[in-house]
Every structure is written in C-alpha cells, then in structure tokens.
Amino acid sequence: MSENSSNEFEPRIVGFLCHWCTYTGADLAGTTRQQYPAGIRIIHLMCSGAIDVVYILKALLDGADGVLVGGCHPGDCHYQTGNLKARRRIALLRSIMETLGLDQERVWLRWISASEGRLFAETIREYDGALKQQGANPLAGEWDL
Amino acid sequence: MKTTTIDLAGADFTGGIEAFLARLLESGLVGSLLVPKKTTGGDNYVQALIKNPALLQDTDVSAPVMPVHAARIISNLTFRDPGEKIGVVVRPCEARALVELVKFKQITREALFIIAVDCLGTYEPKVFSALVKAGQDPAAELRRQAAAGSTSPTEGAAFRSACEICSFPGAVEPPLVDLVIGLWGVDCGRELYFEAEDETAALLAEKQVLEFNDRENSRRREIIARLSGERAESRDLVLDEFSRRVDSLKGIQELLSTCMRCHNCMINCPICYCRECVFRSPTFEHTPDQYLGWAGEKGAIRMPANTVMFHLTRLNHMVISCVGCGMCDTACPNDIPVMSLFRTVGRKTQAMMEYEPGRSYDEPAPATTFRENEFAKEAGCGH
Image (cartoon, rainbow over all chains, first blue to last red; front, side, top):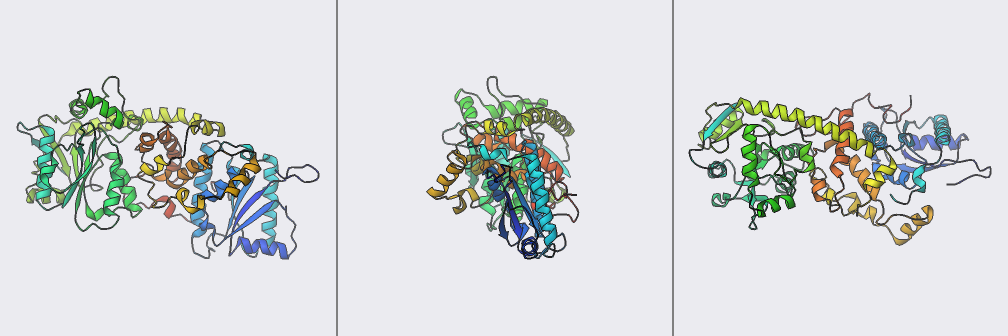
C-alpha cells in the first residue's frame, strides 16, 4: 500500500470511466484546476456498459482499495442504454459481494457528465474519504486467492 | 390440457416407452430422438441420438443417472437449425436449462419436440455404476417407489446433493414443453401416463402415436406439490447453513482450498455456454513477468493464479440463470460443493432480479434488460 510522507493511508482507487461523460468530466476537472486526491488510476472505456465484472474483480483481488465506475447520467448514454445495463451488472456484483462477506462499498457506480468537472473532483474526494474510514483493502495482503 | 393413461397390457415400462418412441420416430413427427440409453458396459446411461427405431432398445427415460446434462447436448445439436425435428427427453433441471439456453440463442426451440419426464432423483455416475454392478436395477426400484409417492436412495447409497434439495420433482409442463411423461403416482408396472396440450394431443392421435383417453392421474399432481414443498424446506435449511460457511473471505478460501482450476465445473455447466470462456482466452494468458510482478506486489500469489476470481466471475456471469442441476458438483474432482455456493448466491440474486430460471421463454434474461428506475442504491450510485 502506498503511503504518503505523513504515513497517512492513501486509498488507491481504480476508475473505469466512460469516454463520453465521466472521462471528459475528469478532463474538465483537470483543465479547470479542481483539486482531488491523487490516488485514482483512470482506465478509459468507451461506455460504462463495456465494463465486465472480471476487470473490477481483478482490481479488487489485486488490492485496489476501491473501484469507481463512471458513466453518463441515465438518459444521456451515447449508446442509449449501456449505463443502465452497467447498473444492473454492478448491482448484481455488489449483491454477490455482500452474500460472500466482501465489502461492497469498495465498488461505486456514479453518473458524472462531461460538464461536471466539479462533481468529478467532489466524488473522488468523497470516495477517498469513505475509503479512509474503511481502511486498506484486506485482499491486498492475501496471497491465496 | 389432455391426459391419457395407457394400459401396458403385459409389457414392461421401458418396453412400453420404447414402443411409443418408435411410433413417434416412424410417424415422421421427429427425424431423430435424443434419449438416455444404456451403455455397452451396462453400468451407465448416456444421451444417445437415435435414428433407427431398432436402436431404441435399452433406452430408459427414467434412468436415475445424469453423467452429462442434456441441455448441453441439445445446444450442440440445435445452435443452428438442424433441418429436422429432434425429439428430446429431458428431466426438470434439463428442461429448465434448455429454456435458458433458448433465451441465449444457443438452442433452436422450433427444432425440438420436447418430452419432459418426472425426475425421481439421480445418483452420481460412480454410485449408479456400483449399484448396477451389485446386481441392482435402480431405475425399476425408484419407479416402484414413485408409484407410492416418494423415493429414497438404495441403502448405503445417496442421491446427488442437488437432487436432495431440488423443488422441481415434476416434469416441466406444456407449453414450455410438448409432452409430459408422468412417473409420480403412476403404477409404471401396469400403465404409462402422458399429458399434452390439446393441439399436440390431437396431432399425436392423428399420427397414431398416442391415444388420449382423458384418464387423468390426479394423485400425481398432489404428490409433486407435496414433494416440492418438502424439498423447498430442506433446500432452505441446507442453504441457510451453507451461507454461514461462505460469509467471509476466510470461508471462501476454505471452500476453494482444493480447487485446481481445472474448469470442470464450467465445462459441465449447462448455463456456461460461451464458446470461449474469458478464463481460457488470451486475456488470461499472462507473461512470466506479469506473474512475477504480482508475486512481488503481494509477496506471494497462489498458482495457478486467479482461482477465487474464476469462481467469483462465473458467479457474476451465470448465477442468475443457475437451475441448480449440480453438474458442477458431479464434475468437481475434489468434491468442492460448487452447487451449494451457486444456489446460496443464486437464491438472493434471482429474488433481487425477480427472476426464476426456466420459468418462461418470454421473460428476458436479466443481464439483457433494465428498467429506467432501479437498483440505484444496490449499484452504489449514492443517494
């Protein structure tokens, strides 16, 4: 787990962001100089509906503290309904995680549009804060997975 | 719905069914039949695709063994229209998986004449083999018991764990299937029992395959309803207990401790239909430096890698359509209770999506559809 100079736990978040909305929103957050925690690693997807759970699970089992899937607001999907299919898939994943005693709050789905740079920064700050409360992902220390 | 009770007039059960299947084949209503047939070795029944009526000999629709799930075979036969009708004999879990595979466009419903049969329980293939080698006739014994309303395994043997908690003892009904062969409450030593929708019954009568005399067996329905309730109760008990076993990371690690990632559970699962599983694709062909990198990151990694991830991913991909047939248990070389894991997770997710696999051809598979306002909280969308 990476730690900063003050030894405070800095959560590592893997962000799967859709090209048309959230990725562009993240870009806007940068160009408008919004401040947000540096622990997010962004992976660029064409659509939140393109996410397969295998990638989310890979991130979590390899020790990411949180996974954020970002897509267009309902009704705004560039491919009409990819985000709504992603919502079902992630609801299913989180339900399965809950049944098996895995922390479902390590997966969030958020709608952030291309114009919502400020919301993107706020969301990362919010998730970072929540993950600091939860502590490091216990799977990070597990070899037997 | 039309019903019929046919007097065997001295013939035995398998002989009577063979004669019926031969008439079905000769009528031209089907061009071939997929039926469980005794192997040359004599201690197993496998699916046989039969064209020649003479080779219906040694078939038994009530054989209490399921070495391969028929829905998988039916998918191989009808993923494209085969150009003729194939008659298939399916037990309840096979019929329900068949319905799911039709939705996934892996089975052509129009190419099938589906004969659903009551299920009296099944033995693991090795158990069935041992019983036969000890001189027993497990199928005849269970048919005899079923007439009285319940079945239990031969002393010293056990049914497959999936069968013990299966709440679908009765054949899947028309119009999901074309014809039902009833066994529960039927005196199979003297008579055969069938049900079909009016149109199918008329066609079978016209082609002189089967007469429908409206002699209904009302006991059969009562027995199935009672057994279904009893099994649902034991299912809930078993799964409640099992869910406590897997409600933590440690529990999952203990469960999968002996997994060697052979993929047998996936290969034998009727619902896992992908021609190329992601776990057998280049996505999971890692380079040496990747493995070493991960080992460096964590200090050590289990090899073969991604064992827990394999099972978690498979749960996510197909548990919604899991019919609880237990082929995963049968296939596991190390006796990991995969079926219990899938049913424990499945009962919750299926309830969440208001979905019951095998219930209808028309309900879309949950992953292929959505509602406009749903699952915001469940998906972690915040408030």
